[in-house]
Image (cartoon, rainbow, N blue to C red; front, side, top):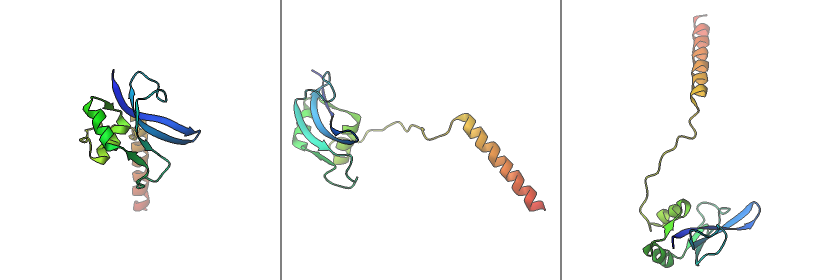
Length: 121
């Protein structure tokens, strides 16, 4: 049985809260789980201590039994100091595409030419 430590969603539409659970990886996201290990409330401020609460003894137990945390839960455990920090790919999603970069360069060149022409006058 492949165990996962993952989030199970609860709450109404646009008002999520999550339970951190130990579950068989074959079960549905909000389906059957073996044990509830904590809670996560994304609506609270990031510095609020109630945002993420975990039962660390049980989390350690499940990790020792071979349960694999999902990415989000792994970040919670890294912040708590339970798991070593992982190197993550630094995806460059915010970098514009080639054509947009070319247009920006052309616009900057035109602006520089206009500034030179204004300075000569």
